[in-house]
Length: 164
Image (cartoon, rainbow, N blue to C red; front, side, top):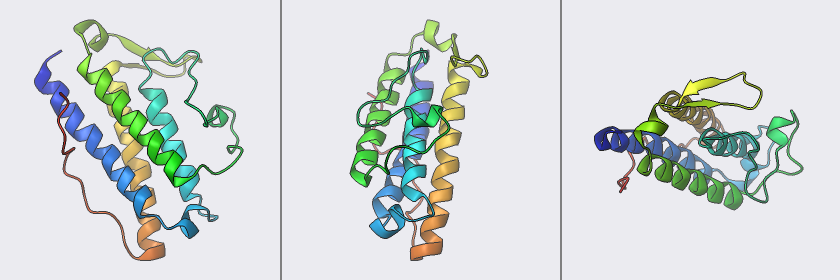
């Protein structure tokens, strides 16, 4: 796979993750644990960031302390802390970096399919789908911040660091 395309994907996708990180960092504790589910939605986004970056999603297990509650159509046992979600976001960001850095033509041309076979995408398409999912929830969280504390993070044009 072309290194220039890898860099483009990295700058834009990692920039999307950085925007989510900024929203999580800005969120006051009172909003994090409120009925508006800010903390849950931040976790949900980090969870699926990780899942969609897993080339072989069959048997996917998130890192501890996170559970598979997202697949069980239930809320997690508790609202994870901001610090836990920030660590999970950094885990996902590094997982993206590793995937792109090690992307071969064989991986690039392969498909990503979930265990229930309800989703099947080319690897590049699942990356774009994943990035859109991160952006979707980041926008929701930024709206909650604007509505509740009259503040929101600035736009991130692209990741500040490079892939390699």
